[in-house]
Length: 249
Ligand SMILES: [Mg+2]
Image (cartoon, rainbow, N blue to C red):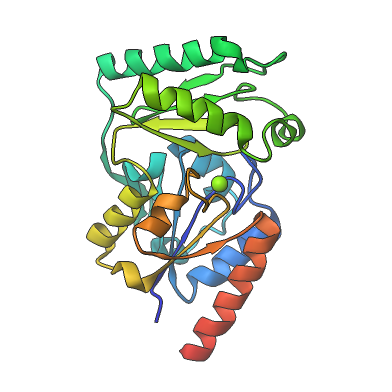
């Protein structure tokens, strides 16, 4: 019997940096009525507020939802209001090294013609590089590196420049840099510790479950994983889960 359904956010619950649509919000609310759920993303807390929480029905079922921004280096639970249980941020020297390396990679030939907003974002415990800028239109982002080929090359360079840090591909154009060992497997470990739910009692749903993808560590951590191509796939997965969990109950 599964006790916890863990979701990626960008590309899984919603298109990159976009909000849940009303069908997804309603399905998640139904799911929270039958099982606990968690969302782990490279994104910051503000993104979760905007993309997820503002769209969900505000009721007691939120107590069944855990929110793990920046791959679980932060952890939020709901008890009448959202409360952060912990946060583990970079030190200043570490940030300078990472931001310098990301800037040099951009200069090395991957810099795109047009950008929308800042490309490098400091999220405290994670530095994120968004190739087209953080405010790039979704349409342009989806076209830029749909097969992850450009970012796989960038990751190979970064792995030599900053070998002491973890480099992962996420979103549509983004690359996340964290402390070593901070990836979705870390988030899974935190869920197990804090919720007391074993890995074999979890299911993970994500759109980047291939080697090098930012969901892959969750599968490597031993969680039964379901690969989706986007939110429409995820909706069918949630419907199936609700039906199975209702029958099992
Ligand atoms: Mg994703």
